[in-house]
Image (cartoon, rainbow over the protein chains, first blue to last red):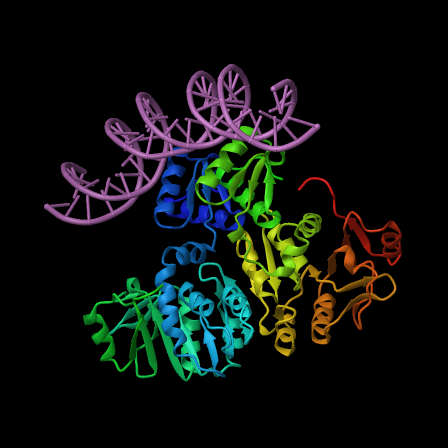
Length: 259
Length: 259
DNA sequence: ATTGTTTATGCACGTTCTTACCGATTCATG
DNA sequence: CATGAATCGGTAAGAACGTGCATAAACAAT
């Protein structure tokens, strides 16, 4: 390994190693980069703080890409459940629906009532697995390279597969939702995919937890329009809701009672 | 098993083992990880405190909730686990592997050791989800209509996706395995897909529970040849094993001991 | 050029973590 | 109830850790 790296380069190299083998040891890295273990520890601490790895005693581990679902799903499962219930009301027998990646969308699919018959396409394996639990659903997967961060297929192959579909409804996973900026996302390839998916559907539905409201991310998925239905949580501020409604989108509130 | 694991990694490995076989013994784990039983006991205590397992005298049990998988997987879980361990020994870092549908193959993917870096393609969403649990694996899905009976994408679109791959190894799910009839299957579309998958790979591996031995189904996937490796259970009759070996295939026996 | 500021690094220190060993206790089983 | 295995709590050694501080390099402003 090279010896004279900038700290940023070193961290990138650590990230690469982490991606490859899933784990790094502080001592090994210090020897490889010919710096003190203190420096490595500082790097690992920073990377952990930035959410790039999990710091453990002795080194660091790559965080399981599954974290978005197992952890995030667990944290706010109750709230997502309510969003899901509201989303289900927009589905009708016989519809063809494309379901984008995201833990909220996974909750929606899990919450589908038995007996509903749909054709459901998705690029996220976990959603496909959940959909297969329901007897009435015809499942179609969009293939391609799975992005660990998103947990779903995105990229050229996935976009090509998408072109076989003209769904009645596209259920998009949101990263940021803002009346002016529209629907925005963090990961470029993911956004590119969502954009195509949204464009091909007759209607678009976004179920959005309150923490995503008024968030603006660097890449634009779509502007809000009357083609869109937004499902907000019961506690979403009225001011924001009316602001969103002014864009022409349909606003649904998740029912606060039960869970 | 690797010897020099971080404590967190060890606990993750225990969790994986717990997910698959449902139970672990303190003594076995101590031997497998080459640490004292005290250390294992401390791990199990912590995991139990964190609600990740149930501590019992002698080891620990998986929580009932941790077994969300299909009925078929559960039936012969222990035996599949042993087949999986043998199959893992055929995989090497950097390989590109296509993994066909099947509960045995799902067990294989779940049993992959942490740190192994592979490119893994599959047509079965549940396998993709399992593969994403492993940090070092690049996952590619084959899209298409999901056959409910098979639990994976088969049909025209899936076969088209397959043409982008030239895997080093194809891990096939078997329905019937017989020295004369070769590898056979019940579902026509599924067989057609498997046939293409097998033809495109440099080598083919089949992990086969004993109940599939000498079974002959209506559709032929492939004849046995020296391109094939067959993994049999420890209790498979020797007569059948030698019969299979005469076709030129490599025969591996799943080790009955250890876990 | 010089001065001050920021950043990266290494070192020293006390602290925390992990582990193995030991003794006392509890448990499963005949 | 007797016995051996499994368990728990405590302890000690050694590794890993974080913090504070000093040094050095990079950079901006004067």
